[in-house]
Length: 214
Image (cartoon, rainbow, N blue to C red; front, side, top):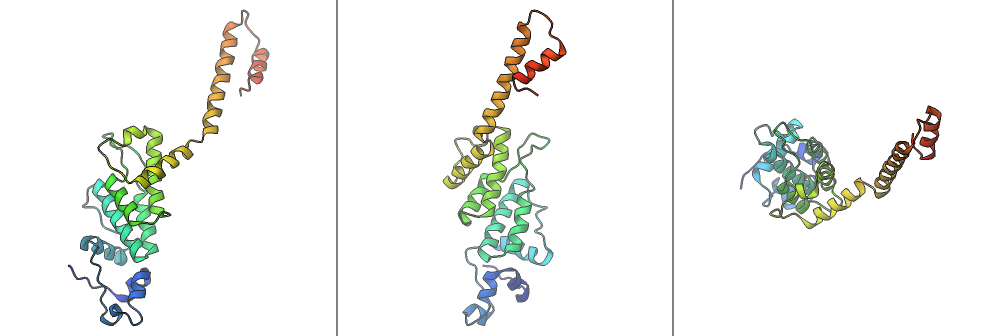
């Protein structure tokens, strides 16, 4: 266990959890000490750094590892009821927009990050919505099978949320409308090719209008 010293006013202002623990007749309020046995000291240290500086220094962490740390920080902020930290950490997660880097590597929060978030947040968590949204964008650029290999074990809730999101991302009526336009264009082109004589510009425009082409 590691001990940390922090200004009470600062942490109580940001964290509703600490604000409640450090007031009234609670043991924590009398001893001015709050024990967090289930939280990693390094993650809490980064949280305190965020309180004092407004940012979490992750420069020395590899990109994939940074998402794991951000996920742990978000879950801690969820536990401590710190809405300011949660908002800032979501913004950091959203910097990943499903793009490939120069080596062709697709950057999204990894499966470890997903498990951390889904095991440490409620169903309506904005962090869950964030990672599902990022992977939905990835799925729009490649196939779901490309994203997940058979060796990956993912949270059932995440897979369920992702499937719903992908289905809603490409609505069926939109797909059908696109297919309909394509068929009409093909029909028009076929009729033009079958014409034995060269139609005038006006005749061609009439055919385009008849097929609903613009």
